[in-house]
Length: 118
Image (cartoon, rainbow, N blue to C red; front, side):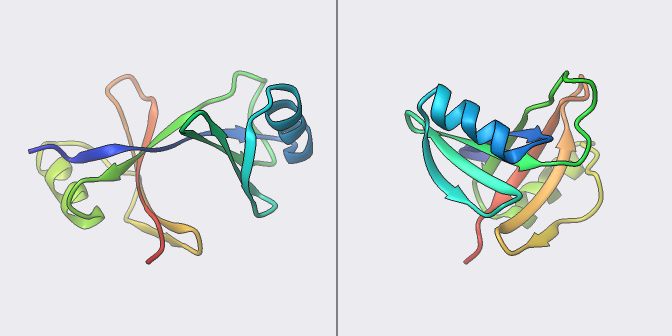
């Protein structure tokens, strides 16, 4: 059984939201879909690109995160993967923009399950 219904969003940590929006929206021509100050989403031909403002993003190396939509609900997907030995970074976190369960792939890349608000 698949745990993933599709990619929800690929997001990037950014240190300066205005500069990031100027690059992705104004220079690359992506369509701004949402802007809530510390979070913005742009459409890249059907793929949602999220920009997440951070005070510190490191030395310019960046770090994309793939957020997957769970197939049968967030709790069920987390439970199945935990049973298979996947380690999650804490519990499901609640936010005004949705619910998130963060985990890593075997190489340490950041992944999430994301469920939008109901």
